[in-house]
Image 1 (cartoon, rainbow, N blue to C red):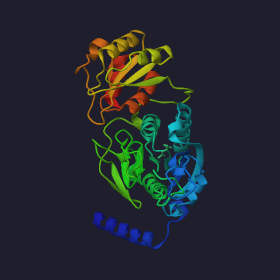
Image 2 (cartoon, rainbow, N blue to C red):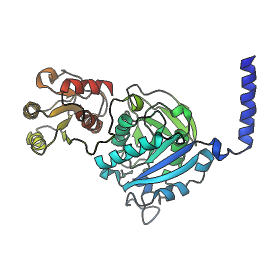
Image 3 (cartoon, helix red, strand yellow):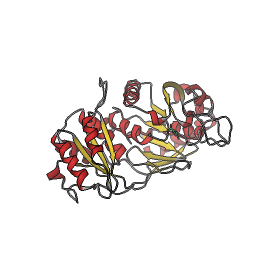
Image 4 (cartoon, protein in one colour):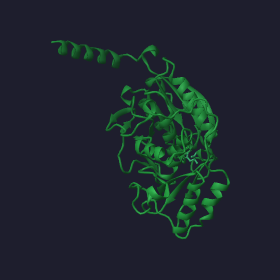
Length: 354
Ligand code: ASP
């Protein structure tokens, strides 16, 4: 009986809601933080390949999608305006601080961050580790500048706001919405330099999809994130230097030596195969470890994990295996881990947990 009454009440409420537009007080409050990227890029014509990222401001992005008002009460702030090739530790720290401050307010329900596609993986994963809230944080981007024919930015922003306004998005970690797909911060990658469908969650699949703002949810993230994360950048003014060294046949080991000489506290190797490298590179890694530098072995291979002690004997060399984290994400986690410790055993635990 109780069930039947409540279902009828729900149906009546639904009929009422669809007949009348939601009053502002009933809509979620979503803040859009703009950082630049192609989504804010402009070109001289609608059809040219060349353009400049980070040209238009957050108000222009919001005004281009008046339908956002159907979904939420929207406000916007400009955190940066760069192509994401220029994303930096300083902007990450500023962004994390602002998101945590906004989400601590009871009248903010979710955040959308507009960003470039180039380093979206890194920013999404960084925020996934340092945002201290289960409220939705959704990053979005575009492959075509705002001035292009069939620009993909406006619908991406619309879907991103629909996801940030959806209570189902809570506690799923930082999400990325692009081209109707909802990706988890840890598991997507940019796969094409130009294709609109550039982002793929190759191994673990999508978290969900958003079709003109209608969301469908498939899965939860399976590693620790946001509210459950042990990492925090509150009060942190800078992050330790971590360099990525790309391993090839006959790679120069002096690249590793140069990173150490120039002050790297951590090194990530983008290894071949299962995080392998030449014997000479491995010798340079041993020397780096002996000097207290933490070395994480990742791989340039796009799928599969780097396992401990497979070909490289991590127990003996003192290295950390990245698991499924690619070199760019490994660098993010190592920077945060180095704020807490330089013990490779503890850092391996972090790589197994996040
Ligand atoms: N270089 C641009 C950026 O990452 C590319 C893009 O946004 O698609 O800002």
